[in-house]
Amino acid sequence: VQLQASGGGLVPAGGSLRLSCAASGNTFSSYDMGWYRQTPEKQRELVATINSGGSVNYANSVKGRFTISRDNARNTVYLQMGSLQPEDTAVYYCKAERWGRYYWGGGTLVTVSS
Image: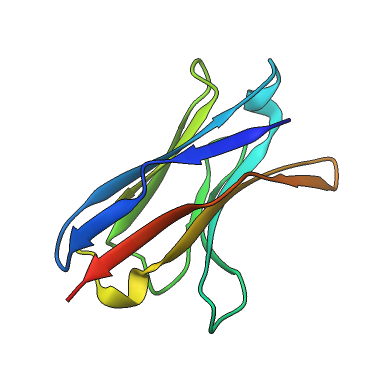
């Protein structure tokens, strides 16, 4: 599967942004999907995941502010981000996982200004 993330940009603190990750192929619904983020100072960290059954999981730092969702008809996973803070600034990546194998897409940069 090939993944393409988009939707990043510059947003003021307190603002919102929606990221999208489009997947190739016709088996998207069978993949567990996730969003991760990375800064030069930190290792890549989990932001949110949604499995093939629709169950979601969030990092404590984004609970209540971010929402992950998927549209299997569009082969796309979304990350709706709200109440953004400067510490949310990072390159955001999406990941697809199935049968113990995982695939990363290119990142999209989110910059939150204070």
